[in-house]
Image 1 (cartoon, one colour):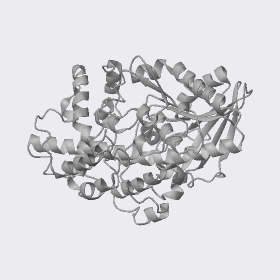
Image 2 (image 1 turned 135 degrees about the vertical axis):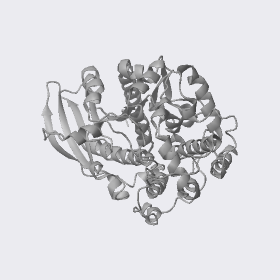
Image 3 (image 1 turned 60 degrees about the horizontal axis):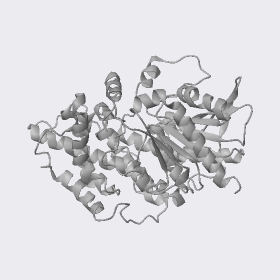
Length: 471
């Protein structure tokens, strides 16, 4: 199956760049990797968010067909890993859109935001309001960390804020911090909805929102409907072989990886995911994706595959691939480690301080040599990106949801944003889940298939009611 030309064209029209400041603080990566060991385990993660965690409603708008509750709470991540969230993201904000008349029960679906989905209006217009009309179902829209919130009590907004609206994640580590925050914040909201007697509860999201919803559901200690749309098992392929790889600031990432030994000497040692689709398949995955996209005039220089001697890599890549070899010997899940320590004990040895890694004005020798040296550095950076992405975003690194039969996954057959080649399928990791395939690509599905997304939500909730309405 090819990739959508519309996906490729749409990406070329966007100016947004990803990870413009690089990998992020090494200490932040260390702390979030340690936290991943906890949030990746449902039994441990459920102890992090109390059932009575405080949630506040500060405004209610009365509409013709619904009431819109604007609320907030302090992200649990701020208590668990202090200082890792930017100050403007400590307060998590949401909109709760409730029908004035319920049709049956009081169902609520939590919608997590996709990449660049700032504010609430897209999800409110395209999903929440139609769901009230079609099914009498309430929607709760949670704002992503790192996304700027416009205070509805203020009528003025600065030019600097407007500029930030176009911004996205500035560091690779920001994506992992966002994921950890959303997992914990989703638990806060699910507990709150239960306390308020809403039922049944479920989660959905489109693109990155679908993947974040998947991670959040893995840690909920009850059966729950999940409808991830246009997402798959890991974010590693999104940023290394999908069309979004063209938006990544690879030059800055390569500079930092070459100049700071902490990545090869310390960070790599913390990576635990060594599944069959991790490092050892990286080169085949890249080549396959390039062959597929070659007819669409995508640059081979970007993916770093034009050098026939690309397999002659340096010591760092050998270290990465040797770790992947461990996974090839039947260890497709986590490498065994002692996970019996408490979160405070695990995080206590990792400092939150340290200067931000910045190579903006640094000249490096490794990247400035021959084309082969440059090619090797780019390939090493790709492998490292795949490794850290798999560590923090691969579904196999998290607990399996209690009832996968309540999961309906929506995929676009020609999705150029979410490549599936060389990646373990969700059916393999979550046996019993359903995958529905749509014709077309990522962009066309988002623009024209919202009705099918909503139908999948209704179908998943119907399954839940049939199985658990009497429990």
